[in-house]
Every structure is written in structure tokens, then in C-alpha cells.
Image (tube, rainbow, N blue to C red; front, top):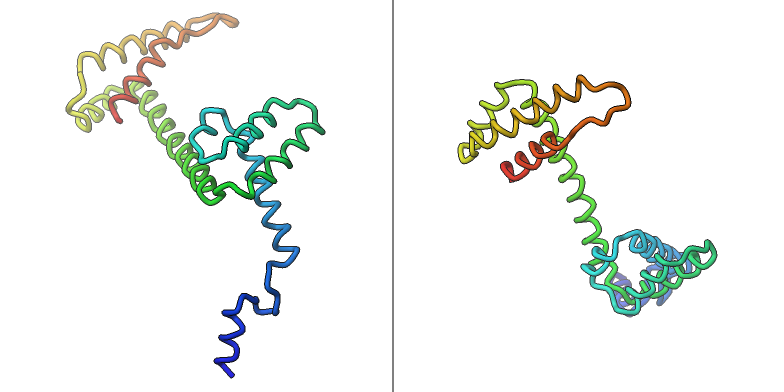
Length: 182
């Protein structure tokens, strides 16, 4: 009996005796490709160029991005979904995942740098710890940037309502920390 079941499963039929995916499965697959196509339409041209897309698919995505009418955009999106059938969807999904997760990590790193910057503006102990953790740091340059940012912060605190605060040294400190910790 077992050998009979094995024969059935290896001759191209599924467990229900069908030799191809169900209509429902085909529909689910098509919707998944359409959704992936919609994600691609939201990407920048620079990101699109980094993906393994056929020229025709790339041009269809760019056309969808340029289309402003709702119905035209919908039709172009469905065309992109149709062209996605021949695209390496798994590779594309993997790259999108890397960009999405990478951006979360980058965001967390930026928040850590912003917190460090704020601590450096308020506390000399933070500078001591930073210098201990990064002995290669240019101490004089770092102190000068912190001093300028603190001076800028004091000047901004004295501004009247409606006056624009200065952020030049505040941003410079962030960039210095970014290069130091990378």
C-alpha cells in the first residue's frame, strides 16, 4: 500500500489528485506578485537600479511612478504585477528585506548618536567616557566642536519667540560623532 502512495506522489499529482496548483493558489501567488510590484513602485529610481529587474519591468515601474491619474496608475500597477511573473521575486524580496531591516538598525544607531550628542552638550563626564571608548579620537577637535555647540545652544536659549535657532555646530557635532563611531 505504501509503495502505491509513493508512486502517486511522484508522478506529478498533489495529494488531491490534481496535477497543477488550485485556482485559489494561483490567485494568491498573483496577488503576492502584485503587492511586490506595488512595493517596487514606491522605491526610488536609485534603489530600483540595484534590483535584478528586466529592462521591460524597470520601464513599466518607472511609467507607473510617472502616472498621475488614479485609473492609469491602477492599470499600470497591474501591468507591473503581470511582468513580475517572470521576475526573480525571491531575490527582490530578500533585497527589500535587507533595506528595511538595515534602515531600522541605522535608525537605532542614529538615535544612539543623538542621545550621545545631547549628553556631551550637558555633561563633561560623557566626553571622558567617549574618549576612553575611542582613544583614536582627536581630543582638541572634539572639544572645540562641543564648545561651539554648547555656545550655540546657549545663544538659541536666549532667542525671542519667532527667531530661528542656529543648528550648525549642533549638526557638526553629530557628524563628528558619526565618523568617530563608524
